[in-house]
Image (tube, rainbow, N blue to C red; front, side):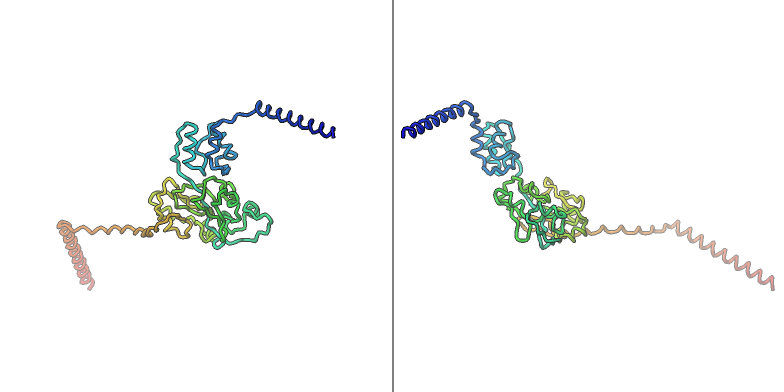
Length: 325
């Protein structure tokens, strides 16, 4: 019994000594965290999406305080969080930047872009399917619909619908950009939220080939470019592209696009289709100048001379005939 008591006492004393030593070491070697970092962590959304370019919200907070990182990199938090970070850091923050959202630049679902083959691989992801001849869709540029983007979205803002095409809920999108990085076909892009007119196609094939691969593809016909009154559209490599800085959301390009490859998210009626320009009328043939009196006199003299010459010829003929007789 005595041995058990001694063992318990020794164990207790050893534990106490080790505890005191660890407490002393923790105090002695404590790394002081700037209270500003903790304050910033407290106001960040906590999504840890990595859209800011740093490893999570704590990494971003540390970068702001210790490295002077920009205070506007948190897309989920937006302008309100940036302003609060500015208050903590005692600095003014420009929050006038345009909000961007993720958009899928493809409408070629399974009804428009057919499957070239059935993929039987165990790992059914876009990245895996892309390794097989560029994917199973007839269009080699389009969305494959296996959901790599859907799986990485931290807020469930992007889903693959029943027709096999990804779509984004722009109201829920936090602009983290993770879906852009996850897409092996590069059909997702961050675009200004206010600019609702988008060319939802990435095909660079010639018109006929693009149309065969997908029924709703851009064929590079240039109708949109010729119609846009602001010069916001340019066709390059058989694909129309809209310059957001010039686009005024007039939607005329949506109306004239023959394949409906241009999409509008505006909740307002489309404008009327512009009438084709009529060719300019041909200039009328110049009217012949009216004859002047002098010209008429000259003509009369010439006619008279011709008549006299004719009479002389006839007289000579008659004289010759008489002489022969």
